[in-house]
Length: 262
View 1 (cartoon, rainbow, N blue to C red):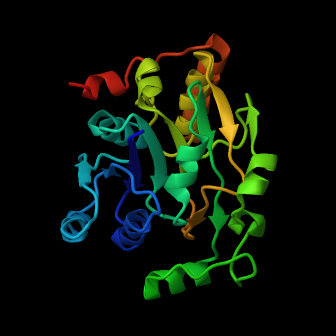
View 2 (cartoon, rainbow, N blue to C red; view 1 turned 90 degrees about the horizontal axis):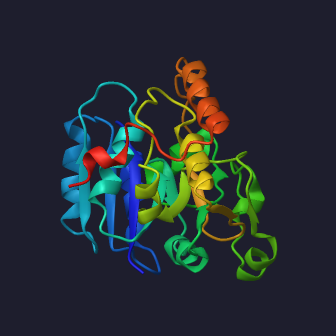
């Protein structure tokens, strides 16, 4: 099974560089990594070119013009370019533990999408990691939140991972799906502008075509660097789009992935 990892980013090249390196050191390397860039400056492009030169896998920079927060469109453009049959989404502030791709591969099943967990790192620890370039965080480290998410155990993963049809707790900073399923629902809804709910609405449409949610615990570990909260001014409008998709049981969005497929 070929896997494409898609990393979203916007003007934080220091964090993106560490996120990319965490993918390059995986026990099981993906086919490629695609940076879904929502309009970063040339500093990000220069960093990607430099790091790609020595990367063990292809690194594709999928950049769109900066016209505000358009994460849905940015992800669709990256999915359209993906060559893997299976897609793992992470954010550019996520550092993946070295078994991350291996664990996602282990839980990939037809008819399911996967929701992983994350470890929240404090501002102080995040600054230290960015300064040193090393992820030095464990279950008992200072500056680590929700410590149980630091523990990797196949036995515990087999016991506590579970299937669900719930929408609550969807976070596409650690999320995986079959590319063909994204195509079936037309990917992310590009009516979403500004932060919030585009991930939940995408998930609703996946469930409306009959897919189920696989929650993975104690595997596919992801460490989330601290950052300030995003601007939430568009959240009320985005909530309305989500409510419409739920109420009408929609499985297709008008403006989505199809526009970017050749």
